[in-house]
Image (cartoon, rainbow, N blue to C red):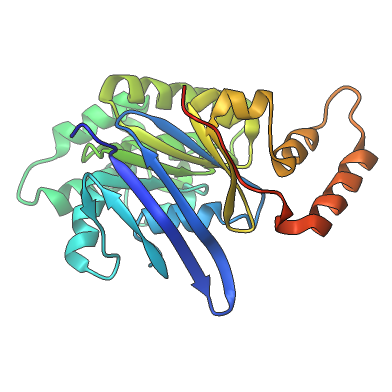
Amino acid sequence: MTGPVLRVTSLVKRFGGFTAVDGVGFELPPGHSLGIVGESGSGKTTTARILAGLETPTSGTVELDGRVLDARSRRDRRWQARRLQMIFQDPHGSFDPRLTIAQSIAEPLRLHAPGTDHRARVSELLEQVGLSARLGGALPRDLSGGQRQRAAIARALGITPRVLVLDEAVAALDVSIQAQILGLLADLRRDAGIAYVFVSHDLAVVRHVTETALVMRHGRVVESGPTEEILRAPAHPYTRLLLDSIPGPGWDLERVARDRRALDAADHAAAPVKRAAP
């Protein structure tokens, strides 16, 4: 394909009378890394779950490799799972506690390529993410958080997806382990050409791993464009507030609180900012 691997158009998700996602749209080129940024309740995780087929949109479309997906279709969900995988914030909760790590990594392989001996592929994946064969034979509870996240990455990579959606994938890890995982993800993207959608509230992480970003507030995209440009010179007051909320030298908590009250009072008055890609 020469076009985007993922195209999202006018995505809306309502839960009763509450609109969690409101008109989100973007394109993701092959091998590209896109950040979705926002505070809790901004709609970023709901967007990620729609991309992975875990939520059905109220309206709008998700197009993967040129195919518009129907989250209600079992056939589409299986086709989608072969090409798009999601890695969650809590790696422990995403594993069956009764299966060894190697067995969990083999599960997607057995689903999408039944009748094949996958032991060699599992060993290759364990080595690729820096886990030993001994750890492959362990249960999830016997691994550290960083090791479980590496195992989750290995499981997602086994079927060679086109897109990885990472929802706060390093948020629960120590800083040193975060750096290792981010380095691993950068290497995998370079070597395999996988595209990433990186959902995070951590602007430093988003700056490190993405080329472009969306900033979400109340379910809407308020600013989008090249990540470095957005973070160096934010144009929307909400993006400026996110940056000003990071503690540092000369940090003025009272000013941050005052700016937040003013933004809440103005609510949606500020128009979305869309910057052109370089």
